[in-house]
Length: 214
Image (cartoon, rainbow, N blue to C red; front, top):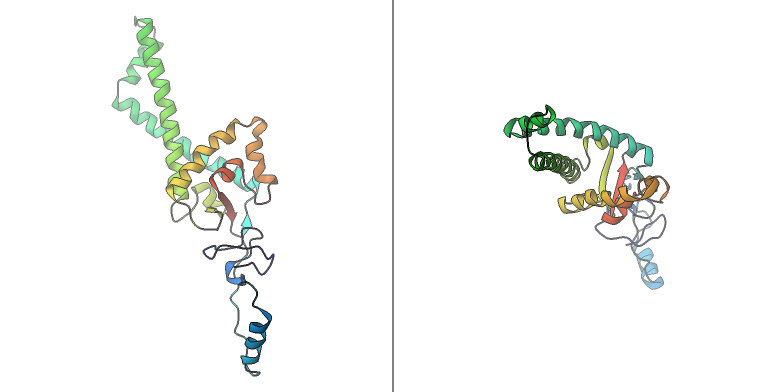
């Protein structure tokens, strides 16, 4: 199929043209040969009335600032979830009392203190990573297609054909964000404000789009 607006070839399963955002319902099939076209015109009754064509809202790519505000909202919500899980971890294990003993100067061997501190920091990192991964992946592959922060701003995540993404793709997008974070001067994120489809580096790697309902 071909887009009636820009002529770009698109997948039959796509919801919109990935090049210009035109709805698939408006996409046009490949051109007929002159003979077939003349035959179709001849077979059309002169008194026929064209049927109304359904119109759909155009798709808009979410810009950098929309995504930045959504990121701040999601960061606050993730912080609340992290603190809850951290308190739960400390209450269910002896880590809290051990760390308190180290801080108060109890007579604990240095290697034991180092082991306790290292284990606590590793657990802290693990909880942070787990909360962030499940937060983004589960929400973005759900019927919302968005985290709560994105949902508040009418943003949603799709693949390049406008379809909802799977948990695997949502997970890939999350972990690709680690690569984005390694680019100096936040350039991997700034790409969301300057690329044609407003894709950050992790969107390009995972083959995703962040769209905005107008």
